[in-house]
Image (cartoon, rainbow, N blue to C red; front, side, top):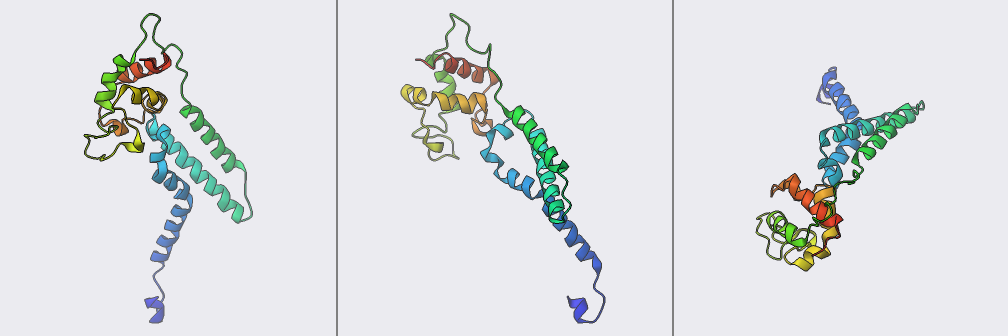
Length: 195
């Protein structure tokens, strides 16, 4: 603008860089939005291959934008949209909970609340307590309290979903729950989550 006001030819470089950023923004809007909200989708970030899932969702989001850009120009091909749908279906299939056949406790070795109570008190109660001891949580997240046996039994489904199926808890594995401890909770839940 200053060059034009002086009657000079403006430098085209800033305009070219601006156009390049605009193209980047166009194709990465959906992936960036997903990444910004991904902390709400534990099944993606807690997955063993979370980096690959993020990459696949990024590619699918960019392909969706390719389709819409082409459509706005009046020459849309269905190929990018079909490719994006296929990628997302593969991601969904990868995120489906695995069958737990064979993970239940063996006959005669039923896991009881007493067996999992130590795990819950060590790995969960630092946050999920009426008086949390973790500095980041002045109150129990989502109001889930696990101080008493009855509270643990009442939350058995949620405990199983969050620690075994999604592996989202403990958040960021702050309390370093082990795979063996997760399997113990799994066996307890599948055995009826009994006392």
